[in-house]
Image 1 (cartoon, rainbow, N blue to C red):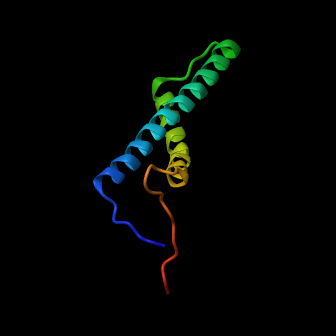
Image 2 (cartoon, rainbow, N blue to C red):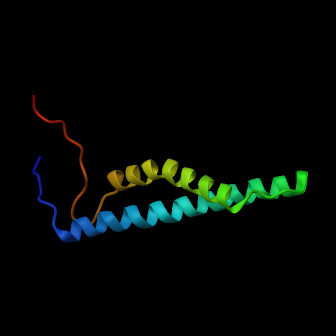
Length: 90
């Protein structure tokens, strides 16, 4: 397998994919989860979670989502390259 030295073009493509998929996915999942929880608590008990609890929940969801975004970056076939994990020698 031929190893390619990553240039700034490749690095920027990977960084952009990680940034937008991580941020957008984390935001959408956090928003949907927070909306569902606050809606159910509001309708069922007449209470809403505080902003701090919602923010903490968003951070937890974003951290849980991040490995999925990294996996997507690893599996993606880019225009002229791909990312491969290869074992080191002994």
